[in-house]
Amino acid sequence: MWLGGKRVDDVLAEPVLASAAHTVARLYDQQHDPVLRDVLTYENGGERYPMSLAVPRDARTLRRRGAAFRTTAEATFGLVGRSPDFVNAVVTAFASASGFFDRADPRFGRNVAAFHTACLASDRFLSHAAINPPLSRARSSSEQDDPYVHLRIVRETSEGIVVRGAKLIGTLVPVADEIVVFPLPKYHPGDEAYTVAFAVPVATPGLRIVCREPLVTDPDRLVSTPLAPFEEIDATCVFDDVLVPWDRVFFHGDVDAANRMYDVTTARHHTGQHGIVRGAVKAELLTGIAVALAEMSGTNSFLHVQEMLGEVLGSLELAKAGILAAEADAEMSEWATLTPAIAPVLALRYHFPRMTSRMIEVIQLLGGGSLLSTPSEEDLNSELWPAIERFFRGADGVPAEHRVRLLKLAWDATGSAFGQRQMQYERYHSGDPVRLAAAQYFGYRTTPLLETVDRALRPAPRGTGTAPGATPQEAHS
Ligand SMILES: Cc1cc2nc3c(=O)[nH]c(=O)nc-3n(C[C@H](O)[C@H](O)[C@H](O)COP(=O)(O)OP(=O)(O)OC[C@H]3O[C@@H](n4cnc5c(N)ncnc54)[C@H](O)[C@@H]3O)c2cc1C
Image 1: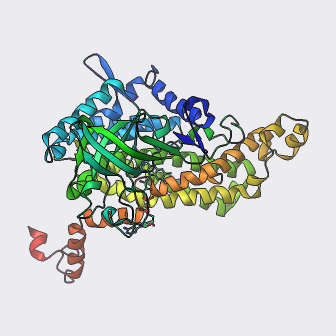
Image 2 (image 1 turned 90 degrees about the vertical axis):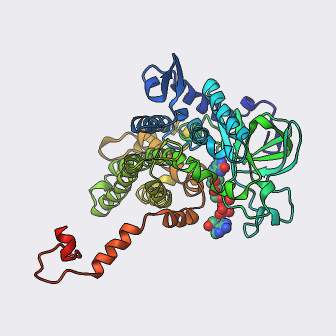
Image 3 (image 1 turned 45 degrees about the vertical axis):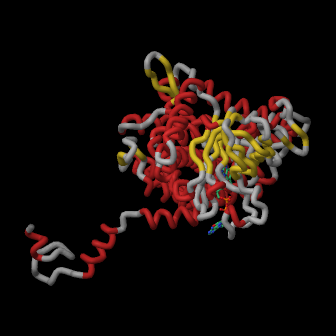
């Protein structure tokens, strides 16, 4: 593992990685909290398992899992996207659709199911990396000028497959137990060697984890950067001839299946539920900050500010409504799992980044120059305090320390490097929004819409007493 030009031998000795590890550890600890245990876990045969590994076969389980996603997200204000429950939902979808993997080879279906069982037994922390390095997005994997940039199979041995190349973006990989690698569309004929899905421990020989530059310099400065504990470090995963044992191979060598895998196994739908639930929790933080800023400075008495607040609160409500729609319109999949409706998920995938962007803008408009004039954490405890206390108070008796902390929170959530990454995360965390919107169009049941247009094209003659657009026969049938 590499961080800032240095090889990392002890993850916990690096403050930024240790901070991420502690945040993840707290999420695991929550599962043992007597108050939260029944939300976050389920009981089977006297043992407890994470809800995120439960296969939703009915509406109750799907809703319970949604509640567990929400409780986990609340612990990090929705700022940690790759909490352990995220890839758990992927692996659970894969396992419940083991028949998909069977089609290539029954061994692979068994491997996927066995991996899920092993995860149930150990509740290990899974991360994932699915994207190929963007050397040239205009060329397929096999057409890149270096055949070993995109991860590919080098050879098969009696022990397993040997892979070489890179995958990104491995968020939280540096503090995870295992990394799950799988293909996301789109692959082309000739890319067969690049289509591979598997799981390996992060500490696998030949696997190098290159952390991105940390966005938080000191995770303990919790007044200046209150969201520092939620810096989920991203990383690039470089495979230098890594041996993946056969029992960890889920799939390989099939372009068509690789392109359909995420959708057909319904991993897209199940992670979609996670994404929109977590997103709504983040939206609660952002809209809450906007309201608090306006109330603290008394600007909430101005009509244009009230409109801005109404706008972002409306977006929050739409985000929450999308979750209910995805759960209420859930459908039974070919794998007999109850699958969140994809249309509301894709709708939010497209619109939520825009809503988030506007929430950020509103916070910055409301905060004004104050966002960039707060004294430092150290100043609060210095001889400057009397002046700070006097000049940094808010409206109606808001104490200076509270106002300074709120302004710092507002900046950290929107303007700091951490806040900017959050925005980029919302844009891209589950794929390119442009192509996701196109997928919405291609997958949408447009027939009823076109029938509506047909009805509108055949207006009922005046005085027939039939409903608009209905023919007299239809009206009486
Ligand atoms: C903060 C963050 C954390 C992430 N964490 C993870 C993670 O844990 N695991 C993981 O696997 N992934 C993760 N992702 C990666 C995420 O899945 C990708 O960012 C996403 O799929 C988009 O791919 P890309 O970044 O390569 O962008 P690209 O697909 O390269 O898109 C960049 C731009 O180019 C355009 N473009 C590119 N190719 C085409 C094309 N063929 N046709 C039309 N337009 C094109 C897009 O429209 C877009 O405007 C993370 C991303 C971010 C930002």
